[in-house]
Image (cartoon, rainbow, N blue to C red; front, side):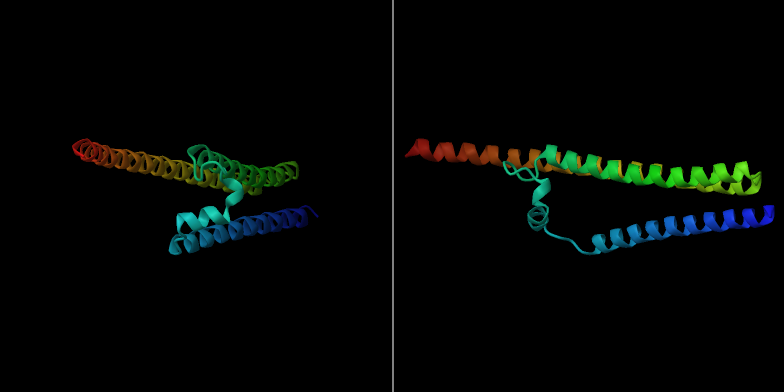
Length: 158
């Protein structure tokens, strides 16, 4: 009887792990597809008009809000998956199945480490994008200043 419950518990852990891995692989495939296909920023803004301010398209506050919402969704999914694994681990401990509980804890630790690594990569990408936008803005304003001076000299000569 005890062996049967342990086997059922192990099967449940395997099923949940398979579901989590399937979800992760689906996300990776979607990311790879997105990387291969570049959508122009203007078209993407038109498609996601609900996320962009009508006053100023692509304003920094809108981008930050989108980033925070995306991170919150990912964090919620991660916490939900860990809670399910913790519940299974608790059942394993109650049934005195220490090897199963250890295996589940290893899965939890691995998933948590993967999530933290992805979150750090996501944050690093956000910082890099912010820096690129800041540099482009500085370059544009540097290009406009000489043009403005040239325009002023032309009007003064006439």
